[in-house]
Length: 521
Image (cartoon, rainbow, N blue to C red):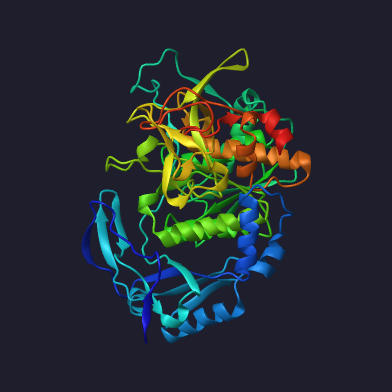
């Protein structure tokens, strides 16, 4: 049977990793197969109009499934292929265009022309592959992505805990301070409201929450604890580790920021494995969830674009396009490692999925206040060891229409016109030394990082959606057309990029001016 290369499926090893042995041929795994959508031309028309800033009626989830879900014939092709190779069909979801197959390493290797190995690297081991995935020729144009063969950790959480003595990597003119999430919202002039009638979806790739911690935390804020529901994706569950420095810190930060600022909003936490398949499955599950129906998603996990396959980035960006047509706002942390995004090759990198043009990429600031007002706000940059706002220029996504004619200012003072998508779009308090008071695994602590900024913006959108009685949806074009409605950050740098008047590759258009944004949206 003739086979073709699945475009964009090529994998390389994690830098420094080595092969230990061939993967156990009897090991069972699950693989997500993404097929093309129905009505692709109409979908492209909707997306193009949204990107141009045209406001249009949002599709309901049910309408989207009917108009742009998978064709039954394409799903049938995947089922037939699976049966011919002894693979089991575990799930089939037309709206998500996803079929999840189960089988052994030997079966998938034979079916898809791959070689899987057990790999060792600095942080552990993973089942990995190199090169591409090969499909039957008749699948050309039908299957868009196959994820899950490789189970390397795909993303990292973007939060930073404060040192007990404050950040020792830089000299500060003032002592470290901290704020509760409602205090941060008040400083940014958030409009009144509770988020009633809204659901905020949180994507989590590990860790968990304890209801007792949430009860104690919200009692301390004199607020009722929000309604929080854990949703299992690909067998992952709410599983607290007991390590406040681990993924529990991310989960609790996200819940506590959203719950404290939009206390009447329901919170759905989608737990998934930290793999490319798990990450995508969590996002598509949330977007197409007709039970909880989140109107806003907050994502505080990611990795440098260079660590992703093109098929995975394209599939996730496509999911965010679907979210835009359904009026779902997607807020994503831009990363905590400045202009390098933690890559040690000496080049500039941006974090994905924040770099998707259909994400609201959220960068970080350092925020000081006096008498209940902001006294100073600059780019968050604690130096190489302390963290800095992620930002720069994508190497994968083209410049969106709403970023045309913009330039990034380098720290050397050179203005460089954007040749590709610029990151971030907006910002908010992220410095651990001006961080958020939270409770994690029974301990009260202070956390920062751009992980806090995504739920900060998500809670603002939930408040606005609630008060307006409709979803704001994809707001990037509108924000860029009305940059004056944000607080411009003009001081500081994130390594190779510097702040400037207007958009910059450190803090985007700036931090929230809640009252003006409420009127705008």
